[in-house]
Image (cartoon, rainbow, N blue to C red):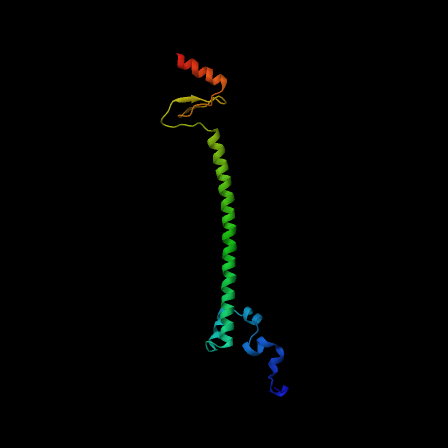
Length: 136
């Protein structure tokens, strides 16, 4: 091929010659402008394929934004859930337990009179009190 046969736009690079637009120019186009540009070229042409790749790139960018938002939302919900569970755990551990069935049980560490079927752990002092009650 002789220099006279090479069109002037060939000196601007491969993308400019074969596709009519550089990837940066396609990325800078708005959606409607890209749609119009793509519709001017027949399916299967280099220009049509380049426009398809640009649409796919834009879709991936949107999906990444959504995934990032979902990740932050999930992390925030996990932290909030952990804090709520911790607070509820503190409230349950310090509140008066009341169940409809069972006998009142006095806990060795507090003056809580809960109505449940849980007996305090047997220590030598509690074991002696349990034996005294059973003997009566």
